[in-house]
Image 1 (cartoon, rainbow, N blue to C red):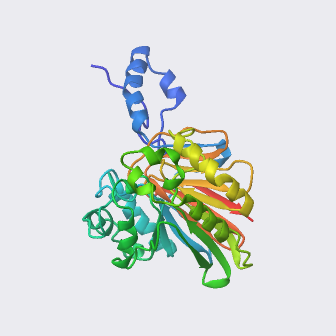
Image 2 (cartoon, one colour):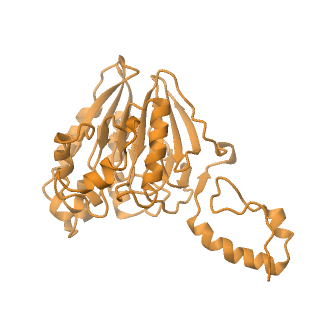
Image 3 (tube, helix red, strand yellow):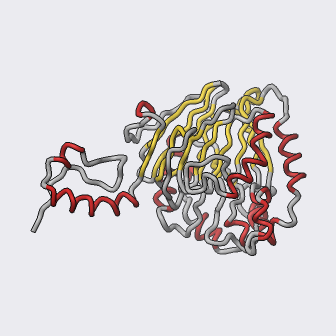
Amino acid sequence: MLYLEVSLISVRETSSHVTLKSFQSLPMIKQLLLLILLVPAALLQAQTLTKNSAQATSATKNLTKESNALNFIAMGDWGRNGADHQKQVAKQMGLTASEVKANFIISTGDNFYPSGVISAQDPLFKYSFEDIYTDFSLQWDWYPVLGNHDYKSNPDAQVDYSKISRRWKMPARYYAKKFPINGDLSNQVLIAFIDTNPLIPEFYSNAEYGPNVKGQDTTAQKRWLAKTLEDTDPAIKWKIVVGHHPIYTGGSRTEAYDTKAVRSSLKSTFEKYGVDVYLTGHEHSMQYIKPAGKTHYFISGSASEKTPVKLIADAEMVASDYGFMLFSISNNQLRVQAINDQGEIIYNTLIKK
């Protein structure tokens, strides 16, 4: 019987690893057996990739707290009746929100798996939302957008739920709101919450999505978005757009039809009106991508499932890990921390005006 004697073998790259030196010191047969054991685990393990080693963040549970900031949690792709780490992520969300006194929560879509909800009385609102996000610190306002899975049933049921739930704030399929920074009305963050589903031509012929996108006026939404973003109020220090589908991604949809469709539809608008951040879900990972131009692209879509990632050209960070993001915004800087289901800060970045 062979015994493998290697140090710190773990399925979580964030906390441990097998060193090259320890691997090479093993007999050949043990090396082969070790590879057989580790390759399947590598497909399941959490993984964080950064543009360069200097950006890598050692695993820590110590949040960076910004004084006098607007704090909110961004999470997405979550509604699974508590399954696939949804409860574990929810617990860490509660702890984080409590520690920084988060002002609100943003959901980047795919709020209810597998096929959305049929009415405002659908049991999934209880099983996947009310019964999961129970921490007192998560009882403040939630601002959701619709994902493609939400379009499989009745997307307007999520709008209607705003009339039942005190914390669920979704007045329409797309909407906008100004948030004062630390209560100061002279320093605000403008956030536009959009519906990206009707912007994807292929959805109109899709048997599941088609019935609910065909009645949408994409021209009207894009005109509304332009009018919202052209606001010249000097109090607006940051402009953020929240949607479900990303424009850039290091996940499985890098050049998928939906990614390309949304990029074609929105990128020029973001450039024209100086959007600072485009925040999305859809990919079940956490990512920060910064191509040329003003806009920073963040993906937070792993609140109950994680999928593989790759480091594309403009990616600063991609992480295949369960978790969410914490945004802390002041009038001249914006900090984003990616936090996993163990409460570890796996990435921390600061953007300055």
